[in-house]
Image (tube, rainbow, N blue to C red; front, side, top):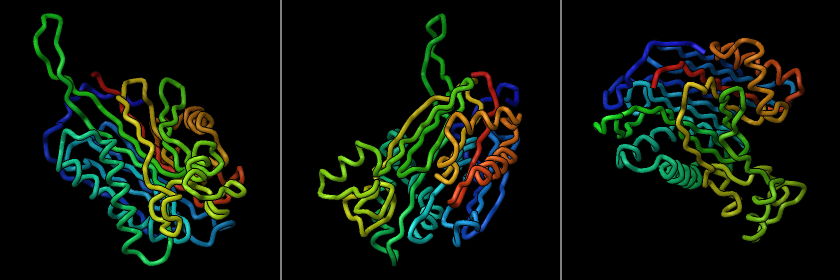
Length: 309
């Protein structure tokens, strides 16, 4: 990990936000390393032309999200039946979330995720032609204030770095904490017993681990032809980051189909790439291709700089 001097986050300070989104790229690389940030981002994607004619993955990264210094928004959208849904989410979902945060600063971000995914789902289904859908793995990294008391019972304000995550489908977010890979998402697949029961309980069929014999995921944004069978309600988490957290991987199933969570994290550590997220994202894709991945692949690696809380 990269050691930095103690830093007080500017939780109330406005700051120009940076924005990165790929649209219709066959492959791309993008690295963001700003000395004002306590994280470094590396992003890579590959169409995997041996197996795929089109690239349907979209990624979005917004530094200083919501115009707050050191906040971050990170997302990967894996499209199917066309790129329209993933492209729409890449361009718009962060704006919906930001608007809802500013409407009520005290509202739980996990509830905001749920409302935002539902709104995005309705917008896509009502306004886009076709029947495309996408999985989504979304993170918000932000500083929050926490009231506390010192040893003399004097009131203090502590700053803590919080990570909020949400996902639908089988794109994953994995946090490397103290050498252990922690999955912060849930794979919504028709092969999952709970998801299978949910689909069947509302009249759907699961045939060969696919909803109505067609779609492998049971939750997504879009997919209007599946009506209530495939829903947009995300799995969400909230976690306080500490100095034990080295990095985080966000990736679509093009990576996770051929690598386990711990395997991917160990790959970064064993190749001494924890502080070089761009190279880490590139080499993870190369490794996934060698392992026989047959899908589009997008990988985002976020390395956390250490700080004194």
